[in-house]
Image 1 (tube, one colour):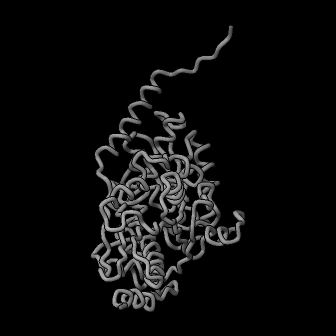
Image 2 (cartoon, rainbow, N blue to C red):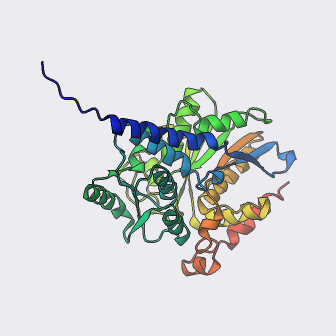
Image 3 (tube, one colour):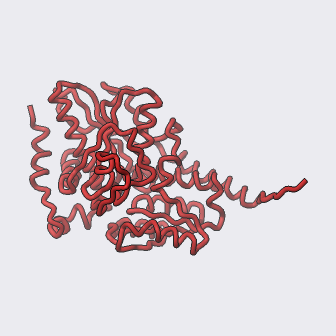
Length: 358
């Protein structure tokens, strides 16, 4: 009788301790807040913003990074000396750098050179290294190359985001939303509105809605320059695009984690409108949010308008993906907008007028 035994007690012990540390991080963090956006009570429609910016690393991607690390550890892909490599537009890399430091592992973020300097600084604060590329489409091949060169592991959020999170529950974002909505006037949202970067969040929420048999519809928003919207409309997942200026959402290609069949509607939002909505949220709520949150809110406003025209009452839920402090040198800078021909004025006035409608 023959056998090959590759059991390594030291590595197994390290993995068990690593998983304990990642789980302990989640245990220390309370759930994220669900804020009521101030709409006129007479409308009979409520808008809620789930504030993912309060995670330890300041964005929705903290959930994804935790899931990806647990997935990599449980699969045996990450060990005590593994260099972790990720392709990212910034926020996922910030969160993964945090978890890599928690486990004492080296981390390399492969990102477009256009990534905001605030995000680069955060990655480096957590001990990560930033490898910037001029062509956003090159982040995949560069990540593979660096992982092979270092003997490390390419996390590949764009492939594994939809499978690393348990969509049936286990404290995922969908379960959290429905739990927090339980005592609201309209506990089952008419719409949940999210963006797509990897497609992981929309896949988790869309699957959960069906699994729990909720009537809620899922709207996915996409910025201009992204491949997701034209691919969803045409049914051709080979569509490519230039890429998005709204960091964190939109991609130049359709990512493997994007699951179009769980989406009820896609909405394409111009960049100027996203940034106007971002600033409008701050005016109305006092919360300084990022550009992808503006994209979410722009679509939520459209859906609320449709509900009012149809005489429908109900609730709409969307996400605060991250804080606006990460975009002081970009979306919050009027000179930066002018250089890129982005005129947010007309959109901002339209949003301001929205709350005054009879």
